[in-house]
Image 1 (tube, rainbow, N blue to C red):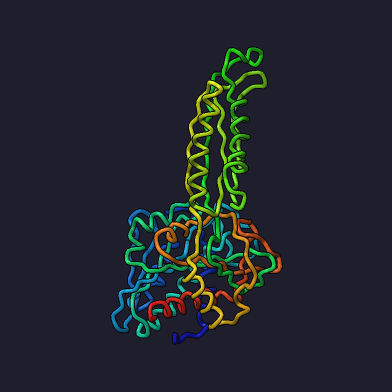
Image 2: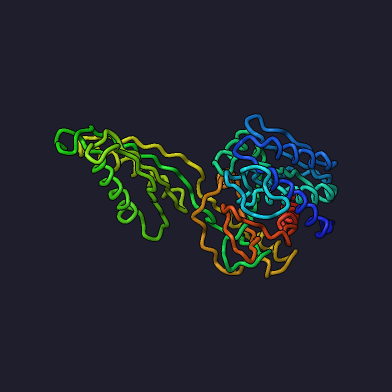
Amino acid sequence: MLKYDPKEILDYVIRCRRYLHSIPELGLDLPKTREFVINELNSFKNIEYTKNKKDSGIIAFIKGKKEDNKKTVALRADMDALPIKEDTNFEYKSCNNNMHACGHDAHTAILLGACKILNDNANKFSGTVKFLFQTGEEIGEGAKIMIEENALRDVNAIFGVHVGSFAPDTPNGVFIIQEGPIMASTDKIIIRVKGKGTHGAYPQAGIDPIVMSAEIINGLQTIITREIESSETVILSLCKISGGSAFNIIPDTVEIEGTIRTFNNDVREFFIKRIREKSKLIANSMLGECEIDIIEYACVTLNDAEITNDIKNIACNIFSKEAVWNKYYKPSMGGEDFSYYLREVKGCFALFSTITEKNIPNHNSKFEVNEEKLNMPSELMANWTFNFLNN
């Protein structure tokens, strides 16, 4: 059994989280955040680490002191913030125009809490624990860089937690731990429709990209309704159209931007393939041209059944059955680049409710985290790791 004081872990996680909340940084370059995390890691006697070459990511690890074991577990936290100006009155509010409005400050602090527990108990487990302090989740790049930096080398399983107010009726301090898809794939689509500009009074002299765009927009929705099984959840939201400069001039080009979301990676690949084919066919049939770019932010976040059920059982054992949501959670259409880890190794991405009375959603300038039970994710990470490596 691991030995630790939950109150001590809670105090430590809150202290770390509040400092990180005051220094939010964006993207891949997080110098102040990395400096803080490294200073904390240096205070733990059993932890070693390497710094990523391509970003501010850190790969830390503990080798258990017990009998030799080749198993390796990875635990992950994302560290980047959002370009949102904070609108709260906390003493530890952001000191710049960015904000930890998605809970990544808590994620980093929670992982440090797990480090603290496992560091103090290194003589009680075997194998290796990797702690992945990742950048760039909000831009869909950090996990890819971590994988390029060999973060998953020899890893048998991975676990991550996300805080927030995901389900309004989920009380604070309750985990959502569910096998299968938990978050959707996320892709940005850019469709560039090319025609030939002319005066609006003489449309026959040109090739109208606006009319082509309208046909493409309608045509792509029919892929969902006529080519994909109705039991699959697929979203195509075309949210931005740019083209034209005057009320009476047909432009040369129109650009359409949007997003694709689904819970099935095979469906996602098929849908993207058909978007490319159909858009070009429609444009060609109207004597125009079409170019398509797909920018991938995340694939489907797909939880392994065995790992997920093990984590759920451990949560019930160390806390109570009430600590795990006993209702079906409808997977989120939001994306998460933790999915790239799950594409490589089996694992689980759990949600942890930190809901407050205000029930403010993530990515909001007033977002806040209920800190009362932030020790629980640290404890769950550490106890699952201990159980996985010793069994």
